[in-house]
Every structure is written in C-alpha cells, then in structure tokens.
Image 1 (cartoon, helix red, strand yellow):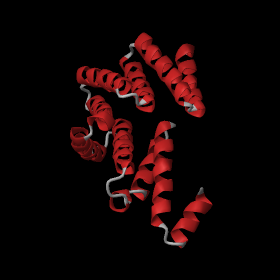
Image 2 (cartoon, one colour; image 1 turned 180 degrees about the vertical axis):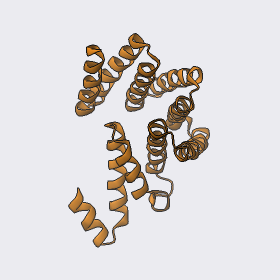
Image 3 (cartoon, rainbow, N blue to C red; image 1 turned 90 degrees about the vertical axis):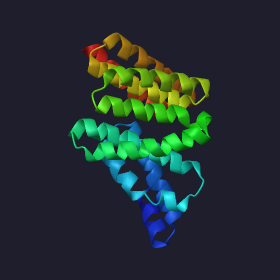
Image 4 (tube, one colour; image 1 turned 120 degrees about the horizontal axis):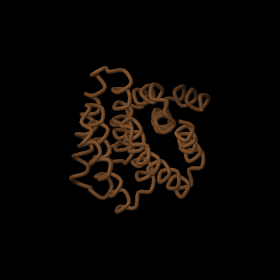
Length: 196
C-alpha cells in the first residue's frame, strides 16, 4: 500500500491516493487505531473536492466523525467534538435527501456524540435506533458496527450482559457480511469480557 500511495503521489494521481487513504481510515477505525484513522482522515480530506456526488464523501464524513468521537473520549480534547458535529451535520443533510442510505449512519454518529458528552440515556436510544434502521435498510455492515459500538458503550456503563449480547450480534453480523478478520477482532473483545 505504501508503494502504491508513493506511486500515486509521484504520478499526481490524487484520486487514487485519496481512495487509499480513505480505505485506510475505514480499516484503522474498525480495528480501533483511532489516531491512525484521524491521520488517514486528514490525508484523504481532498475527497470532498475530488468526488462530487459520490458515496465516498458520505463514508469519509461518517468514519471521520466516529473516529473523532472515540478520540474525544480518549483525550478529553474538545476539538474532536467539533469534528463530530461537522460530520453529523453533513450526515443529517444526506439523511434528509437519502434516508435509506444515511439515517442509520446519522443515528450512530448521534449516539457516539451523546456518549462522548456523557448523555448516556440519549446515547442508548440512538444506538438502538441505529441498529434497528440498519437492519430495516439492510445495511448489514452498519448494523454490525452499530451493535459493536453499543456493546462498547454498555461495557463502559457496566451492563455486561447487554454488552455481551451486542458483541455477539456484531460478531455474527460481521461473519454474515464476510468480514472474517473483523469478526475475529470482535471475538477477541468477547474473550476479554469473559475473562473479567
């Protein structure tokens, strides 16, 4: 990947480089490397200029917002909440025009923002809504991610049985989606829970 990025930049193929960084943002977030995900979000920021009217803009805003929410909780730095709010506003606009594709993403961003701000009651409702809409709209990857994030939230809240339930749902959904490495990642979280 580094060789491909280097070649893309040297040949001035910014579209290719931007897409690679975008995919790395997605992967870094999914596997919990939030600092790397933030670097990749910054490296792929040209996606909004290069991809007019493409879904990559939506997924970039989504994963950048989710990354920022995680970093807001890890670092207590308010700059991350500003990014969450910006991502949420973009997603709200897209959800108004394409609710089938974006409403569950907006709800998950809202849940993560509520969680980051300590509003656990509204976070729980937003996670459940994101899960239900993902299922209704048949976005198995969004449902898996929403279940995983709900599990992490419930783990923090100390509701272990609920967390375990959501982790198990997430594991099964990632397997169904064909994301074996990610399902193994979730399984390792379940194993850590079981040791406690």
